[in-house]
Length: 551
Image 1 (cartoon, rainbow, N blue to C red):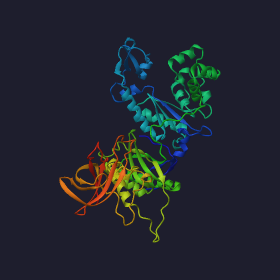
Image 2: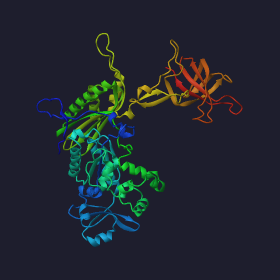
Image 3: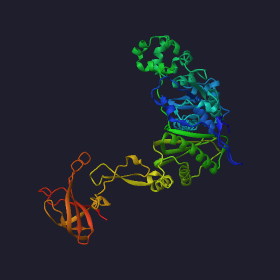
Image 4: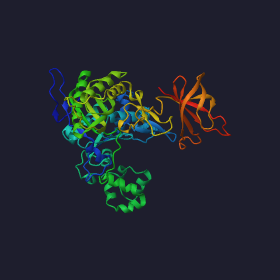
């Protein structure tokens, strides 16, 4: 286990319970310049992590390969088995990536050989990136063996950039991974120095100076372009930067010039974060991991109070909440709840998380305990303060929406549905079924009949419409007089119509128009029928259908 640094302690708790360390609360606003939104001046800070022996570390961690023997990972290339990855011991013995397995065995007969598994390596890198969310919410996978983190505003939690880098490296080392890390104001600068340089932390504004001694390979150019530049006598980034950029742009294109500017920290493209950036989030770190469910719920409640306070200041409510439980061994468990309306009540939020915990097929396994718990609000909507009633009591909460939220959390949002009006005159398309947590701001308005008027359409609709047989009808546009439906005869005594609805030709090319009738039989039952098409020589008996039944 390891203890993290922080800025201040949380509120006191009862004797015998844990006392966590509260970090700062964060907002997405401070991260937007790193996500492609223009900034007056580059003020971002990035950490690049390179795992030079990731395939070998994975096999040794899984105890597939012994740690005492030189390990090489091979793949068949043009008919020969070549080394695609090696371990540190194999490198010290003189082996290198690209050598044939035969040459490697000639140098070191006692080799442990495994086949390359790119999918397993990518899965390990993804798990490492998941754990790195504890350092920054903006983590990008730099495949196949690296990560990029936007650590702007995050270093103070660890006591500065040097301590953050040290904590990161120590955590990776304890996980059995070799890593090289660099912090700089440019993501490409940090990435290049992690792979080809020796500087650990580049002060802001010194990126161009820091990369001058790096080889041309640090640009990541195609092999042909790299060889062409080398043949011109240019071996380093500094030598290339001293030449007029227009000369190389004409020969190699603007792409090479842009890469040079990026590695010098003069251009700052946005990072493609692997996970959605929350609108705001609060978190708590612990000097000793916690594992009891009661403790986790208490932390979520306190974090919910902090988050709801911030939402109130912004006059917003949360729609999607995510609780991230970071285990000390690197595993991360996430719980997501969605609400049908904006919400910023900590007690309700805790109740929904309890529902989610109770609905889990497998209980949360704390392992060696959780050393970090984060509550993030992924989506928000406007939510003004509620107006108290004249009796001094607050306006009652919408009980139906609250019930829908609880059912959605317990059974999943896809299983709790509701009907919404759709923008279509076609009765078959006039209603859509959506999750109950669907945003009510876009829910539309149901058409309502005039006061003391009967509804124009029935509540009970058939989809698809059911065919009926007409034995007597008024031609050409009159209603039926006698029809059979479900083996029973109905005699029509009253009718209204026709109401013609043309087909949506852009969705149903060639479909016939429909003439709808509201009818009533001798027993007082009311139906909604339609005729598909009109009477003509081509269709002397157009089909009739039952669309719905009035209550």
